[in-house]
Length: 432
Image 1 (spheres, helix red, strand yellow):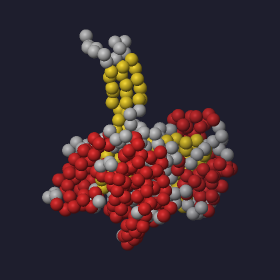
Image 2 (cartoon, one colour; image 1 turned 45 degrees about the vertical axis):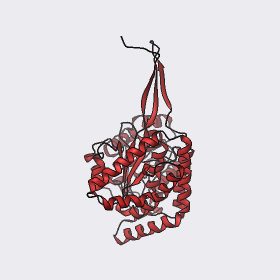
Image 3 (tube, helix red, strand yellow; image 1 turned 90 degrees about the vertical axis):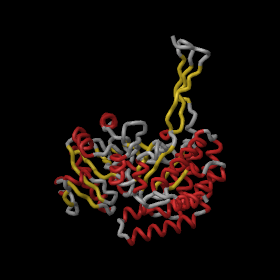
Image 4 (tube, one colour; image 1 turned 180 degrees about the horizontal axis):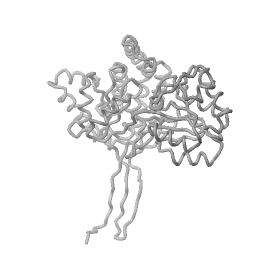
């Protein structure tokens, strides 16, 4: 299969830079074909990829079991092992997500704007693929399928570089995707997995591979994202941390606040949309703080709190300054009582990461102000922070959550993986 051929190319090439340059050239060539592929052909490929993921389940799960065992032997954290682990349910959900991407409207060729000039020129702004997208990720093997499917749907080529923890799983998933591409008549090189654990490959991708890579998307921890943002010579879609807040405002209904908070924190503690800090308005602390803290503790979540929070339960440990800056990705949360919405917004601006922040309140004025003033990619009102997910936004899936301000922000789905060009239609006009 193409993945095996790619591994052979690596064995024959003289140096890693030559090997990576060859991947880049193949991706650029594939991107030209993908840009003109019909919507029907792309959707057929996605259906076939989903079928191959299901048909190859034993092979993929076997590869993943080896990755999980190696992670355990290496003493990796429970949170990392959870992100790494596939089971039949998660694999089925991965295949279903690919199918959902195939059911989305084609983002390529959309007319984004049109205007007619006084001289008779008709100018259209049309959505086109970005080109070649490099995705560098760590422990989540499902990113292989999610990123590959989204790039394919948007008419792009993808170069995927998995972390060493998920390398075997990613290879098995990429093999299934190559099979689906070939069966649909599309180039196997449209989705390439870098078949080496050598970290130097990341540095080469960040240079753009001689102009062959158009944008980089890092999916991983702070160390990876900081390196990408520091070294990349091409645009980056990224976020450093998901330091997400749930603010229980003065107008919050207690049962709703408890339900939304527990989901935001405990549904899956290892995802970037998990809440890491709870802020409780002093105006409702007498009635809300203790029940919320008890609910967290009873659910198995460690609580680190300020003096007011520690006073409601002896199981609460002191919060340090570092806790307000921390993305735990674990069953740990920091809790603070704040003096009103001004203090809540100031805390989020000081310590947050511009990812996802929530307000719980029945007061429309409080909600409107929070939604307007909190400068995060996603802000929610009376809804869990764990809705920070492309699938939940109706995007089918996501390639990541972008917290920057250029081009893409929030869940990066198929529409965000396009850019645009202008088509100018005339009838012989010349410029005076």
